[in-house]
Image 1: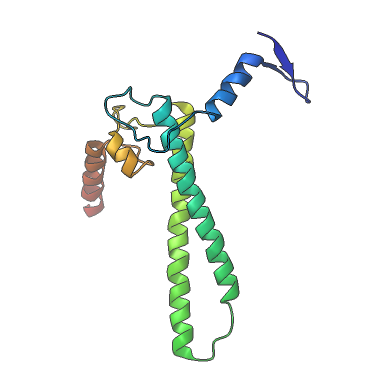
Image 2: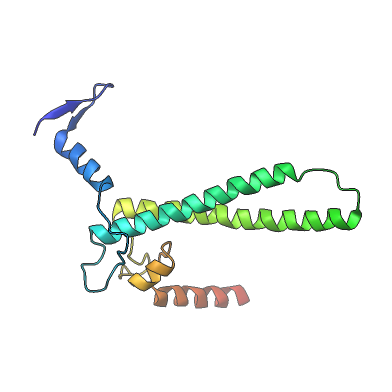
Length: 161
């Protein structure tokens, strides 16, 4: 195939560029749900989970922006001690929630990287397929349900030592 020149003088194979464009333009019907009777992690399933993860991340990021705006507005001096204590408790709870969501964004980013590398949907412990139901419920899952349960049992045993 022909080559396309880029401003910084790197050459790209036109087929590679076309392949990258095609990846971003996958048609996904609105009512699509991954099914067990189709090939595992086919193009539609991968795109479904990619979009689901991106939408989840976008929701979290919007919520974080709203929280920051609210915290900036609510940083006023409240004369009543009980009201001030209540507001501080609410603020601490909101910050803890946002911290958990920040960690969740890191897990979403890791799942998106697994999609790019082709590892998404496979257990990091056993290499087996993670069920579509589990992935649909928790798209950041990295282990099959059985491997996750074994991992948690092992953690409990070691924690009790």
